[in-house]
Image (cartoon, rainbow, N blue to C red; front, top):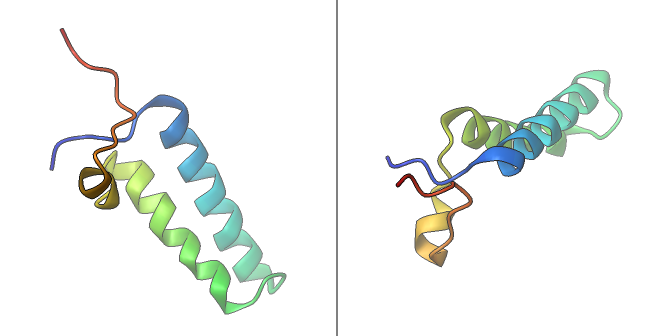
Length: 63
C-alpha cells in the first residue's frame, strides 16, 4: 500500500471519523455513525483504496 492520503486530507478524515463515532456512541446520529470508522482508518493508514481507482493522490510527491 503506497500512501495516497496526505496533509489536510488526513487530518480532515480523522476528525470527521472521530466525530461520527462519538456521535454514534452518544446516540445522537444512530447506528450509521459507525461509518466514521472508514475515514478514521484511511486517515490513520494514509491510504484510501478508492483513490487509486480514481487516479487521485493528495500526498506531496517526494523528489
